[in-house]
Structures are given as C-alpha cells and as structure tokens.
Image 1 (cartoon, rainbow, N blue to C red):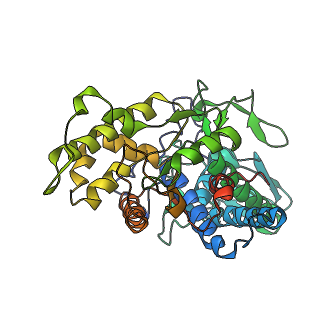
Image 2: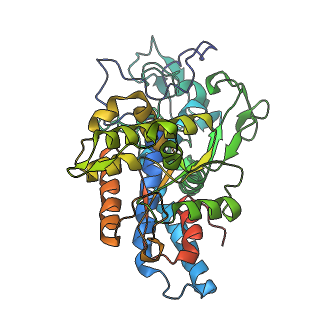
Length: 428
C-alpha cells in the first residue's frame, strides 16, 4: 500500500461538525448527513411500520396475552425496519472509519512484489514472498488522498452515489476496510453489522443522549486492546426523548399525557399543559371576540401566534418534556382560512419546528366518546375533528416533521402502551 499520511493531530475538527459541505471540486453529495435527519428517518420508518401493524391488532383488548404478543411483534418489526436506514449505515461506517475497532490487518506476501503498484523497482519498496505485511487501518482511514477532509467526522461521505465513491457496500477495501478484506476478513462482519444496526436503531429511537461536559470525540484518546476503546470511561446522560401529543380538541391528549407520565416511563419529564387556556385567561384577552358574524377575527390569528410563542417558551425552558400541544395552532389557522406559512419566518416558530423534528410527535385521531364541551373551548363535531386531524398531518408532512398517528381503532385502555411502543419502548 502507498505510504500512509501522518497521524491526525489534536487540532483536528471535532466530530460534531456533521453537516459540513464538500468543496466545489468534490463529487456531488446525494444527501447531507445531520443527526436531526437520522432521527427523523429512524422514527419515520418505525411509525410507518407500527401503523401498518394496526390492521393485525387483536379484536379483544381484554385479551392481554394476545395484545402483548402483538405489541411485542410490532415493536420488533419496527426496529428491523429502522435498521435499514442508509443514514444509520452511513453513521456506523463513518464511526468505523474514524475510530476502527481493530488497529491493524496482518497478511503474508504470497509472491515477490513492489509497493506501491505504480512504482518501479528503483523507487518502490520490495516485498519478498513470505514477508509479513501490517496495514494500519487507523492511518489508512485518515489518508487525505483517499478521503476528503479525513480528520472530520462526516457520515455524509458514505452517502455519495457516484460510481467512484460508493463505499457504503464495502466495495472499495483499498480505502475502507474496518473488517479487513479478502478471504481472511472478519468472519463475523455480516453478523456484527446486522446486530449493531438493530441495536443502534432501537436505542437511538427510544433514548436521547447528551455528552454533557465530555471532551469532543475527535480529541478522545483511545488505546488498543482486544478492540479500540477510550482510555477512560465516557459519561453519557440518557433519557427518553421528549413526547408531543397533538390533535383536535377533546381527543384525550391531556388524559393520555398524565397516564404516560404516571405509568409509561416519562415521570421525570417536565409537563407542558394548558397553554391555550393560560393565554385565554390573561387579562389582555378578556372580552376580546375571536369570532363575529363574518367569521374569525384578526384576534383569532393573534391568539394562535401567542399560543405558539408560549409553547416555544415553555419547551425551551425544559430539558425533556411531555406536552399535550404542539403545532396545533397552525392547524386551526389552516382550517379557518388563514395562511399560517408567514409564521414560519418568525424565530419562535422556526425553533418549534426544529425541536419537534427531534421529538416523538403523535397525532391523536378523535374519539366520539371524548368529544364533549368543557365550558371554555369550542368543541368540534366528530367529522370536524377528523378533518382537523387530517389537516394537522398534512401540515407536519409539509414541515418535514416526522409523526405517528394514534388511530381511533386503538382501544382507549391500550393507548398508553401503544404510544410507548411508538416511542421505541416495549415493556410487555
């Protein structure tokens, strides 16, 4: 192999620079990698699979054995679906390039040769039959002539789709060989990749992680043992991701939030509730009309904007939270003929959208038995509530916010378990 490039120095950019764009001379990227896009892809795959499984849901919710067996099977199938994400594969391949598990590959020359292949006998390095050859993977994977910006952690390099740079299928062992190459490559590489893809898909869907005050991974010192590992333990803070329950009025969001926080494993999360009621009870809103003979007034638009501002304020003050409201105000504006899209230019709305892309967002389909007046809000008919839910789904799709639908066919008593499974938690 050609002489390796010098080892990376401590001044290398931190691996958190995940979405740095390529230079103008580099091959075009099929896609740019970001953590937000990865989480969105994993959850979208999981949600779609769980939605498909609803058709095979047991008819009798009282049959706990059948219900638990169905939920566990749906959970496992959703993990397998998430594990097929190309973004996840790119992340794992870049991790293996950046910090290979094994330090070297050792081979024995089977014939006399000159290295590199392009060299002449006078300029190359002679190899004799029987000589031992040690290939330093850590150095090979950081070569500037093989990888653009080799000291930057960028999974996007494995999303390139040109013929010359398609490495996502291990098609170029001369560049990328975390498991070795040839007949003597790691016999367990396929099993290992299958396992780690499923484990990572399950964990990244169900948990949110924070490195806290740890040093950047690019500066992390490692040592070679049976496998490459840090010289000291890394402390990670982990919790379940924030959960947002949204949908029409009287769809059971508040009741479900309380149940999930009491029994579903979100007890340590902050509660965000009664946002709309809080705004309506302010002195500034007393006596103001939201509707007249011609329809909804300008105050109705102002109200929805203030609700979004308050929602963003509360979310930004929390580390992890469970909320019974999300981008619902956009739905009410759309349903009442107001264009909500100009609000996307406002900072608090942009913050909400980006934050929601990293949360578990569940849209509740309305249940007829829950639609009843509470003395404060306008309660829609069942048909109107169903239209509102469809409108909210269309808005979230336009905003590229991944979401799951909680179908009305899921029994009321089983809703919390189903939502927990949507969030990657299967406790049955």
